[in-house]
Length: 251
Length: 288
Image (tube, chains in turn brown, orange):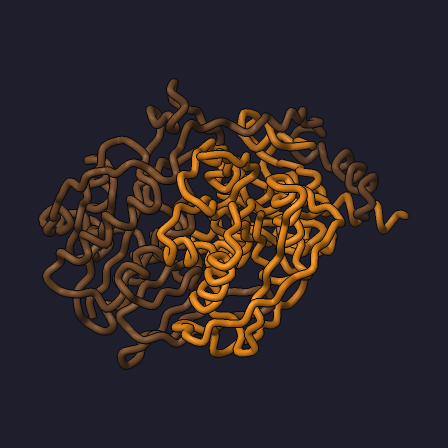
């Protein structure tokens, strides 16, 4: 089978987010980058499915030139090739993102049996790019999946819901969005990293249309204003902790 | 007129969506549910909701901040090729409509304009407090042409206290150091009748299953007390525990960002502090 995984380069935020001066992005001067956590599981699943069933895998991103770093990272984990839609540094809204991905998928020489996305990106969290891509391509789509079993021209998909799991059985080709917990992603090996440098990477530069969901600016939520009550240092703090637990009615 | 998608009438997030809708248009809020004996279908329900939307001509369609609220609205947006904004905290009608929505699981806010009508919005969970006012839910007929549908429900039995519903949660982070290190966390949790949680660093290392993860990509919790042990307080984690009424942080680094959100702080190594707390609880109970 042929599998495509779509990923997004996002900063590795630590404890405190700092905005750029124009308030349109997170200041990343001191931050590393990764892909959204759900997408890491999508990549791992693609690699495992190809190991089991044969075929080939590709990773696609719409992102700045620096996003090649994430594409190489994903290829180091076992993805065969990459498609890089090189974007300007500006925000692409969900419709523009979906349309660019659809154009790229249509221009591939071989069709995909399975197109994986993360359920939502870690940063913008728009919850819709995959659904839009599926509609444009006329494919079935299920979101928030934590279990995938591949059958004969069909997929059995499991979605966590309160009290259990809902099961969907859908024909391929299909679009599926996955959630972290689907699997435990592997770490890249040194030979994997070396191989990734030589794997094929196609680039194109789509034009960014006017946004329909237009970001004006970002703001930080108000500070909690909390001042923690220090109960002590080390084991000596235990009596003070237990007093607090008692006051809260938890003993 | 504002149309509210009533995925489930008994849901808190649906009532929050109603309240949000009234903040846009206090006088004309209509709620629509889908009458589908065959069960949930994302595209089928979206087709039904799209038909009602086209018949009624609302200025705004609001979905609850549930997985299915986001999923169905995304399908409606795709069918109508209209923009959609997920996880909104406020919206002001106009041409264009302006809104504020959350990013990074609530660690960041975005102000945006939405160019399209009707505006398709979902409401960020717990961003607005639901009022008591209800409206009659009109049931729309299901679409017969559904492509994807739930075929089976597998019930899971959870032993002990579920993380999402627990009144007290004790979590460990990278500072726990190993899977075995969680013994001290489990001991304290058992004494308090609490659920055990952990940070993403822990699940990525394979020390605990993903079902234990508290965070943006794990479980969102809202206990009376959250005890975070050896957790630095990355935005990924804080997105999952900001619903906690009280937060107690135990960390050897007094600069750790988790202390900025904490109500109670203990500076120290959890492997010394947590067993001492457990021993003190036993002593108090034994003596009392």
